Image 1: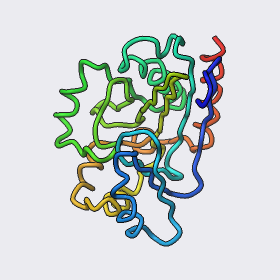
Image 2: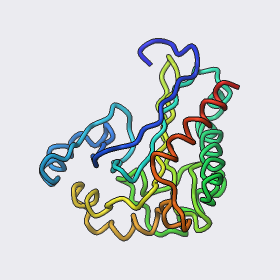
Image 3: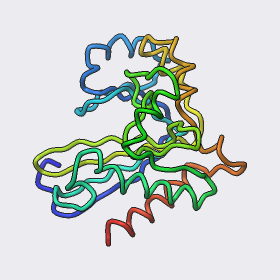
Length: 214
């Protein structure tokens, strides 16, 4: 996004090792969190805002860069998540995982039903069009970064349960483990034959290729 985005581009990611990614507003907590991590585990600071994310082999991520005039992102900011969220719903359905994209109007009630928000963690609350199960637990988290050159959309799907105790301990909030467990769900809890991360990544790549070519 250093230069104006002329056409959609995307990548789908899997992770070999766990790492913690902090939002730029959490810079003051970086050194303290790094000191609590196991030896060799990486902690990074991203240029955008938002809460902490625990990446690892349990997650598949997609990054999509779009021109400002692209239909996915030219409307209201919350609506920019709608198409990417629904694309994930469709891909997951093809793998036997039932989920839905959460409409903006339902977000306050869904957040309240799941108990106190864990506001320092990306997966600790719900946003419009994020992908949830029937109980409203977050399965796919969404984020975006807008610049004059274009829009970056990012999604992270929980294929298996993350080590929330690791994240909460590193950020100095061990009391929030139960909250993270209550507010999130992973593919392996929603189907008897959960997809492997590599398979989900391939399906997401194919779906994004089709959608963005159109």
